[in-house]
Length: 239
Image (cartoon, rainbow, N blue to C red; front, side, top):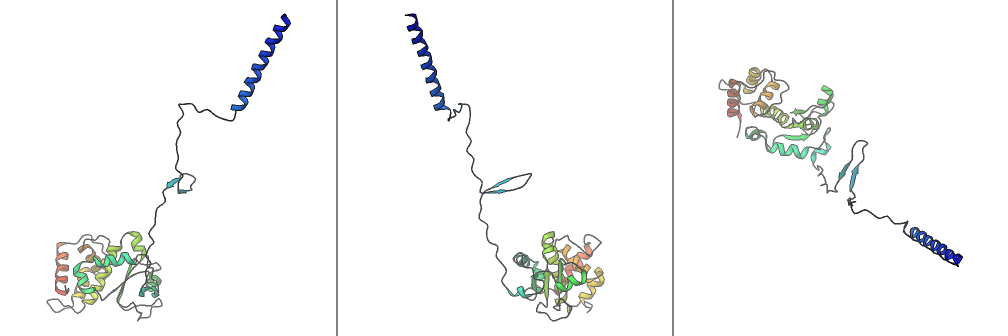
């Protein structure tokens, strides 16, 4: 009788152990996440810049296509063109005193003047070319009466002042037959007054509110210099 109870007890223990084993085997492939765990949804980036030190997650954005210059300057030796549109905009904002004389008479070219490059061994910020000078120094190129503003000037952020400087050269050239009240060439008189044609062009930059000077070493304009330029412009400008 005791053996019968012992056998029944052992059978019950074995049955319970088997049931627990089967239950654990069925639940071992799933993970229960505690209620305190938070789930974060991450948006997959469109673009990731790969860098060892930093990563930028970028949203996809539409990039406007840059309009390419399509005009007569494409065949000019040294034409760059990447800032031609910006140069044209700057030309439209030139002071009226200059624009009234040089407008529609001068070509404004975004490029590196090749003959000037060969002379100074670097691409100048700006060039005034009254005679149309080929890269080999001969004259008569189709860019006669032209102002060149290079990409270097734009990169340096001096494009406006360089444009004023070169436009002053053009203005001085186009008004070369204008005389002082003493019937002397106003252009040559200005050379003597300021020290040279280049220093006069730098003075014109200051006169029109700029600051970049390459040749003038005497700083801001004096009242007398300002009056001289005003008289020069008033006498020789057409509008």
